Image (cartoon, rainbow, N blue to C red; front, side, top):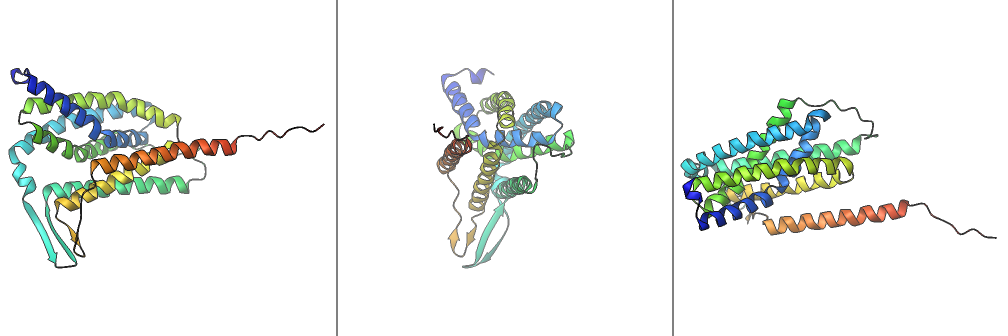
Amino acid sequence: MAELLTIDNFITLGLLTLLQAVLGFDNLLYISLESRRAPAAQQAKVRRIGIVLAVFLRIGLLLLLVKVIAYFQDPIFGFRARGILEASFNLHSLIVLLGGVLIIYIATKEIFHMIGVDNLEHEQKPPASLAKVITWIVIMNLVFSFDSILSAMALTSVFSVMATAIVIGGVLMIWLSDRMARFLQKNRLYEVLGLFILFVVGIMLLSEGGHLAHLEIAGHEITPMSKATFYFVIGVMVLTDVVQNRYQRKLMAPKHTPQVG
């Protein structure tokens, strides 16, 4: 712990904690939505257990990446049809691509479920088992953690600094997850917005995975969606949803016609 007690490491720790918070928004949203599949009385417990397990696994993943980062970047397989489809996949790109596919699948399934159900208020949807929900939270947390861990490794080589930032980020996530879950429960109209944000997250992961795999389609290289673009799109979606909801409430408000006579 003595290596933490330097000004440079404290500054780096602050930057890494901020990075964990910024990059963890989409993960937090997923956890809040996924935990709703568990029985209502145990949803908060599921979120805490899932995040705590994910923090330990993140630290383990960090240890692994420090030792074998080169193996994650080495090509595993690829294909080349010049001018049609070219790619060279490594373990990192495959994990990110798989995460993108899973998130898009989950978001799309829930969106179609919302459309297909006639009465959401009285819907009797059997809860999923605690183990299943926790497992999905942990798996997706690890998928989301790759970018933050690799970014942390680019900022510092001090393992204790990176591990401390992960623990602080986990504590913040536990604190915020209950608040976000309560907000979505009280404002169910924002569930659709949350699912479409997850859909955009999936697209971002697919673009990142395609870039890591040097994927080219019809001679055009896949470029990753930048974080600035991602947060700009999310900001526009949130603003549009807020304006739409307020406008809809005004349209549905009872009209008061002036009485004559």
